[in-house]
Length: 254
Image (cartoon, rainbow, N blue to C red; front, top):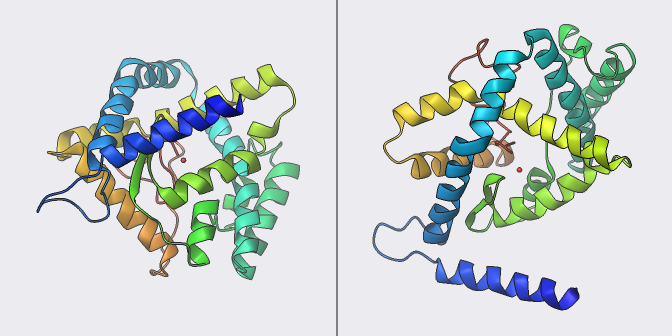
């Protein structure tokens, strides 16, 4: 088992090394561009063939109220992990607001199905472990496109592994329930971003470069001390068309 894992890791490392981009037009933040483009094409094809049609059907047949409840429920779970990361970054106000968001939505919002905290104007502070590593000075390393999860970096890939362990959905003991929640979370997230994907298809001559540049700029702003903007919510694509969440990738979201 361990031997097979080592071989798989070695094969991935060789693929990354072989994917190093060179030449005058190479982006210094993206030395693995050939490998990343291959992975981007794979993810895009899978999205077009399976994920987008399923998410579109989910949006068409599921009432708006149910979709909003699912978004609030998973958002409340995300707030719990954001609380941990805000504490690790020594951000007292963000930690306090995250704590009260989770407490209010869990106890008065029917386990998070209702977003009472936002109605009380308790601000949402989305944070992941990749941002925590960046806050403490860990360099992002090369840009990296992960299978299924999409845009990332070497640092954020490590952060994603920790995020998976910290997310309460992934820690559910009942395997069928856990898997169902993971699938629902992915489909619900993709459904909320259907409008964003359509705008990207229409606006970008090179979808790969556009997605890469947006991701790198957003992560740099979220970690590098840029002026904080009010967080945009995408509870439903028809409510806020054509925008991208500041801290979420389709998981797609990590």
